[in-house]
Length: 293
Image (tube, rainbow, N blue to C red; front, side, top):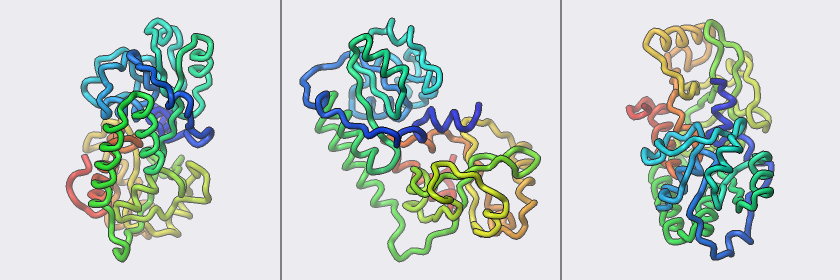
């Protein structure tokens, strides 16, 4: 599975192109009973708000909650099954980003469409409130946002606490440190690393996923490298080979100390209601604690 496909599917790409406002839909008093959320974080949000019994299908990359896993799958960002969506007769489809094919289908079939942006802590809050308003789960949305804020406040590094230099890396080609990219300065994970007591020192120039050269990595001197390989099953031998590749950079503190963390859990890339747990697990990885897996 291509890494970029995973990133797009779980909601980290493509959300900034269009603001998620639908005040007319939010002001309606319609009760929706057949909902299709078109991204894993949207699925998690609908269930977290207590409306999971209204969901009739989920995307291929949905991994949580357990109650959602047996529902029909309708593809994802790149391969939405429009015929299957039509057969399921939803009365509300929730999307983020453009999702042009799905948007056109909804327009043609008279299906109500809600656009939501959830790619930062602020937009996660807003997205939860927006979905809560449309689903008549106002109080549940307020409580969920308050719970997230409370948990994040408890986890956040103090203002005077030094932040550990971290490199966020999206994979590398086994056998050599090639094909690496990182997460930009405005990305969801860069923001969460800051809360976890780190600092993404290779965030780049503002693009979403800038390429990462060995020279730039060596110049920034990260103390910890978090290498994301979502949904990969790495045995001990595979981890050892990937770790050995990093020995090509003995001058980088993280490589010299062996503080290379291979993160395969896809839920750490999902900007949704479990954001506080992501911060907790990133902090564990950055500060050499247990709890990443």
